[in-house]
Length: 245
Image (cartoon, rainbow, N blue to C red; front, top):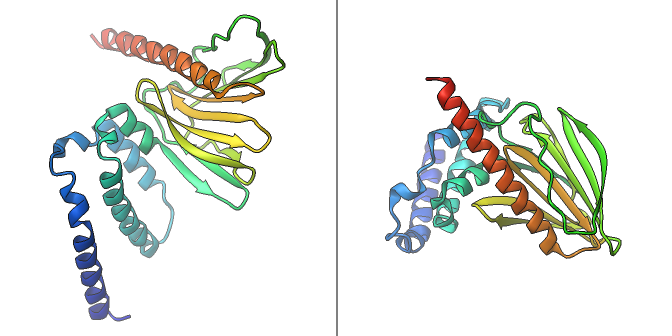
């Protein structure tokens, strides 16, 4: 395809896209354009992700075009959701790589997050649950909780590392993005074996899996951990503020 034909093709694509999106865009006329503005912090995360690409120039150009189309679709389908800054940050903070039998989830760098585990954040389980510590060090906190009815809950806390690979089985599970209290989002894996798993980030990355229990307990644990993590983040920001004075 020569340059002139390519320009003509792109012009047709733009025209078709504009026509098909007119009605959808009109539906959001009442939305304040500034409401979906990405914060400077989130913008830096996106730029860092783009700069990590090590692909040829032609591939980068294609990726940018794909990213532009994705941005348009995202703004149309979740514009109202993205009005909330914590949710905007959570959406942009996850990167997925899908394979035949598993999915790899990467978490974008967070300049405010500790590089090691500075605070061990443990969930509060209902009365009757027993606790077993499996690992507790600056790189990983891993606990097993056993319920009175034979339930098992596994809890994993790790520092946010953009180079870390979080791989999950997708062949025998369904993967859904779910909303947590406080404007956070998580990936919910529902396995054929009956195990449910939540994965998300908030100061650290958290992985909580439950077998033999109600998923409501998963969300209770997640909300409890998020409240504790948010309190630690505010405390850290408060200390940093006065340290600079």
